[in-house]
Length: 506
Ligand code: NI
Image (cartoon, rainbow, N blue to C red; front, side, top):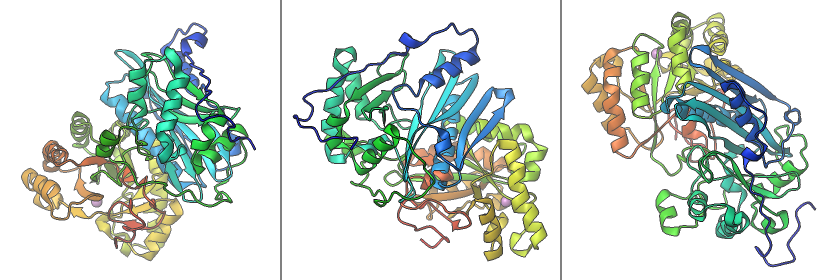
């Protein structure tokens, strides 16, 4: 056994390894690009690096926007759709945060830090350059193939043991770390939602809590290590599997762990509960937890066009994400605008090449509009889209099968603003903010080719945010659910509870 039950009292002996990167930071860096790489490479420090070759089906995808200094490389994992979706969500979130910070360049990379039966750990590391220098905000995802679900770091610790765990981290940190800052960080969810630590393991199987630059130290990563035998009783089932996958990496091929799927050990913790309980385990969600938040996804079809840049600006002002279902012919006609949307960190799905009624199209046309269009979008954005919206919402079994072959899920809507018909900003705002159909998990249909729609967006964002709505992308809506989107199936709203939403039935 790699993890031993401690013979001594829990927490009696802890060792501290407080890692300051400046100590090993090294050769002189002369260019901004080299500094970026340095920070990204350093981010794995403290965790055991695993070999990406142990994850067959892992294929890096690269998005480049030379005009805006963007390079974003994250993997597709062909054996794990929900994990791939998490990589996309974190890539987009990193791009959004960089854009909101006024970054002059962005580099996003990834690391495999553990792999084994049914279990894999992947880091996404966004680093951007701004007026105040470089900012790095890594995020870590743990994936369980049995449940096909992604988890953030707190899921490695049993909910009932979180207080003991945080006490041990405090003791391990000793006097080298500001106790108030540490306590505050341990109560937060990890990035991208908060400043909580990424949790993983080193090559000895010891538990490592890694804090991003700016959290405990103004500039550097800080890694605090808790010995394996101290941490063992607090680890969840996922935590135990993750420790083995880090200490002794082996092949992850997408098959479930023989011991069965990981299930939630406790209901998701709401923000109010954290404030009351103080030492409750933070959310185990990756990104916004739409199981507890009132999440809504705004979607914009038929672009990119002449109004799209203005819309991207309005979304940036409100720090809101959106999802764009783009036409291949519009992407080819307006490539610069398309990259502006992608580099701002919004989700991009396919809306066919030229907007025919697919339910009335022959096989050759379906090939061109669905399969070939995925390649058109891949050429522009570095990877095939994971979501597809049929023009007019028209689809049938034949269409669904062709979409399935591209790996995309079919995303419809449950709030129709009818903006294409009214062409009126006030009417569009009213329909988006005050629709009787609007509920947690809703997907709102609009079009970024109409000036009246784009004119309505600032008021729509303000109106929804004033109602307590958390605006998310379509993929964020279902990332943490019991069932994510599946290729070739159709959804009208999020699937964060069971499988409701599929075929627009739930
Ligand atoms: Ni359309």
